[in-house]
Image (cartoon, rainbow, N blue to C red; front, side, top):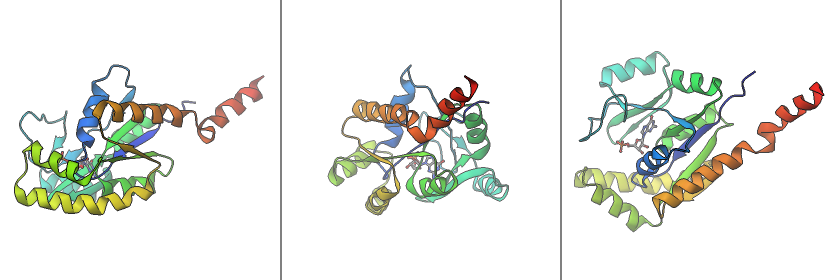
Length: 204
Ligand code: 5GP
């Protein structure tokens, strides 16, 4: 029987750099988890490709996915829907592969309820001023959206308690190294692997 993969959830406040960290992790050759591409109703940014960065859908299409229980979690964030297709996650975990979600905090709470055995990592900004800097220098948002995102971020930091690990995103490469180290350690956690070795004793 194939052991199920690990569901890894990277979340944290808006603008902390979840997307950048995720892209860096997946650009590295030794990364051996699968990225779950989200569905969104947000318009593609310059350079974003449907089916690679997101599945870009209309609000009607998204609401249909909600109604048909096709999403493991979903949230409305700064005026747009974002969600995780459940079929891909289930199929990939049952193939024994680790699945990596990079999602905002409301969605992470839903995943925690559905998959308490998942690995929940909270990405933390070094400071609030640094967080604002990052949102501003991204240059893709209006002043109103920046203010909304800062307000949301402060509320989101309080949700840290629901996570297993906190990783500061001081440097992208260091944050990635810490995340990968956490995943390796998590695979060695006794509760996850004890059964495998007990079965080995039964065979002998
Ligand atoms: P952006 O519009 O900058 O790509 O993403 C905005 C926020 O939505 C980010 O915090 C990102 O992590 C989050 N996000 C991306 N995909 C999903 C998803 O499938 N579910 C949830 N809940 N949040 C998501």
